[in-house]
Length: 295
Image (cartoon, rainbow, N blue to C red):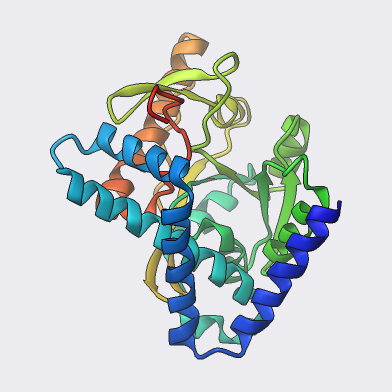
């Protein structure tokens, strides 16, 4: 509890200092935080480099380090943006944010089965509430709680919720998800988190099988809810396009286990395509492929 209070005080102090800075300095502060993390968090830096080498086998060490450093810098900017978003008036959103292909969302909601919006650790996923405001529909987000830091977790969730999100813990929430879909709500789920080996379905991701949570595929197959990928494209500091994509074609006839793998593979394949467009926008520092001897 004491540690949480200290961390909350530090974050609030940073937040208020950032508010009085010009935008160029706000962005520079985020980049600097990211660079500092790149140099101080050696284990996470090694994880990022190891992950990048798995995917970009044709790149030399200099290119790999450049992408890894860019990933950390973008994460620093994301953190600063998350702290500042609550202070942007919603009537000014139109000056900073836009939405592409919202017809996929509107059309899907007409079917009254809700939407499973698959999101990723890509660009600034922390301000997904912007999508809620632009769409004019509440978005329910599943998030893994910080179990050992309850106060800090609640504080961060209040910041995330300020833009219109409803956050529920991603633990035993199957019934809640079903209820929200029956209410024709948009339920956003991070689709690129590593699942425990004992529970995960092993699905190809950049040529290697990784443990993947089966939940999205199972719920989509059971409810008929469309699965729509949604991600942000960075157009500048606190300036984004929210890109909605065509629903993924979910297969529902055949062997259940094979169907789950096939449907999860389609989600992983989509993520691969956007990562290749802007590699430094994805969060390479988490162990999506598990541990190896170097990390």
